[in-house]
Image (cartoon, rainbow, N blue to C red):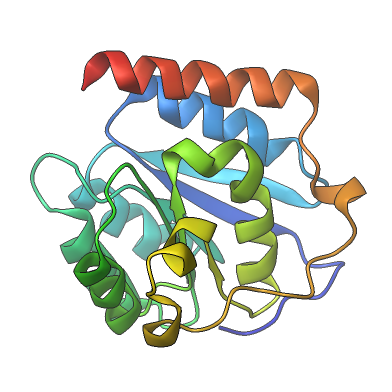
Length: 180
């Protein structure tokens, strides 16, 4: 992925089949200076069409969606937009899954349970041309199979979540637990 300059606005496509999750992510991401959510998709097919049309710099995408899976959408988006940074945001964790998304070209992997502390940092890192993997991945010994977690994230002030943003993420997490 091409590293973006501080003056370049970061356009983000959100892909998740749950409207409450998309709305919460949009609130969090749009609150960051220089970032804008350019579109939201509720399926892999819709994500692919919007990515082709809008050419976002970053795609934040769930893996479990009706129709085209997140893995298939990841594969298709990477083939058409090789410079787009893709951050997977999911409830699912397995060593095999992490290896697969890395092989397919995702640059970030965040568990939805860690989104309140990791999502903004992950998008920042990927926008800067780095990778970012939630701490749970290194805990399970996947670190050797994945690129290293970003180490030079900007100071916390531009990426720290406000209390309102943390509340939005908590609400999303609680809603997702009820849905599952």
